[in-house]
Length: 298
Image 1 (cartoon, one colour):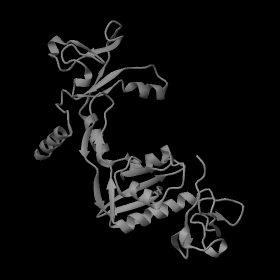
Image 2 (image 1 turned 120 degrees about the vertical axis):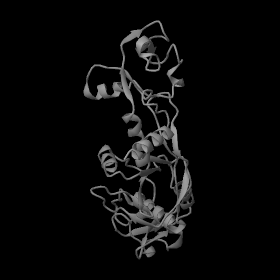
Image 3 (image 1 turned 90 degrees about the vertical axis):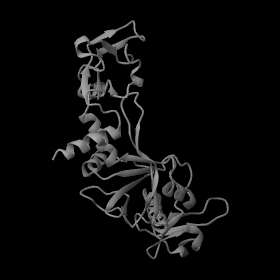
């Protein structure tokens, strides 16, 4: 991706568009990242943009200007749309929706404030809750930062601008920020993570007990918990004699999950199914009901 040109800069501490300043050094602007003097290039052949007075271009000038512009857009709007929240499964089971995308009210915003070693691009406050927003232009969140976010338990949204092959306008950024756009996604959601763990809590790990080359071009076998324990029948990783395909089973939350774990640990592959049949959990409503029953015991 080519390096985008800055169309916003700082003047007297305020973010300003290049169309609002004089040409050349008379613009009186500085880079929002390195604070060095800028030249306003306002020719007729090229897109108007800011360039550093020195020959050394700042690597993060454009990205920092986007962060500042995003903060300004959200602050002025006082509204922000968060994406849909749902639980996805490592199986054929359809994802469970927790909430659809919705607009929230923004009380205040902070830019690049440190939270226990985490420095998010933007922090949005909505009442007592806070939300991290990361703007991905050139550097995606690394695993270390993502793990810190998960440990802190703070829901985080990423807005992906990395595929933009030209300078983004403030109107385009406003659409991506304030509405439910395809560039906006959860990289961590505390509520979704909670329900993920609850499904795992109520799941039974069923190891494979064999392999059949004659069924569905070869399938791993295990004992199906939906059948009578005294007359257990084998079912296939992709097919079951009694209930049909696993894609039709609402209790199957993961298939062959150990494959990923074993690859990481360099161990022989083992295949299994995570099944919630014994606990009777097949939906988020089931989890809510059983949790309420557990609370009412005390």
